[in-house]
Image (cartoon, rainbow, N blue to C red; front, side):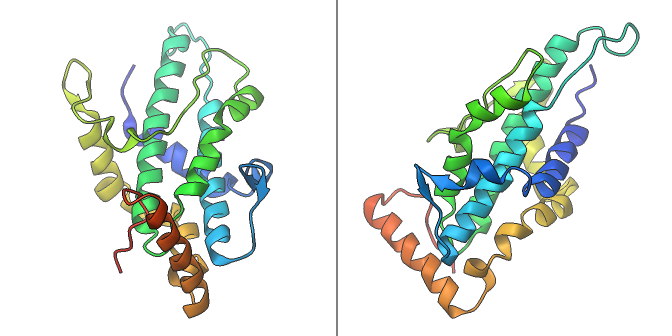
Length: 212
């Protein structure tokens, strides 16, 4: 199988951008509580929808046997799901870093909490992975190589995100970067900043660090 990271990454970004509004049911609440209408909650619900759309994409990856082009569909499907999961988590980290005012980590975590549910709904042909998020997500790719050590996964993803597919990434993340809390008037920005300050009070190591 040709390791076409670019095609896998492009497919993920396209589905995140186009399908974020079709998975609303998975992002109506956070820990059982409906999202509010202030800028902080709007930004987090938006982040949840983007990530949930990515999870839908992963669970929709299906490979079918073909005697010429696809002789090992099981392993190829699993590889593409794993690769897409790593890519989704890298994009989610970009979302956190580019959301300069709003702390959107709660929304991202809310989406990953329903990954098992999404897998059950959409992945009807084994293998089916559950893409998860944890405290080590940011660093888990360090030193990871594939293709007999020829490809450093972190370096490859960094190149895709910051160079080769930067325009696609920026377009996908516009829903976050252009949300009212990040680029709007004073009031919604204050709403996001207030939530960010509270997050830092409870967790000094939180990703809710303003760079403005």
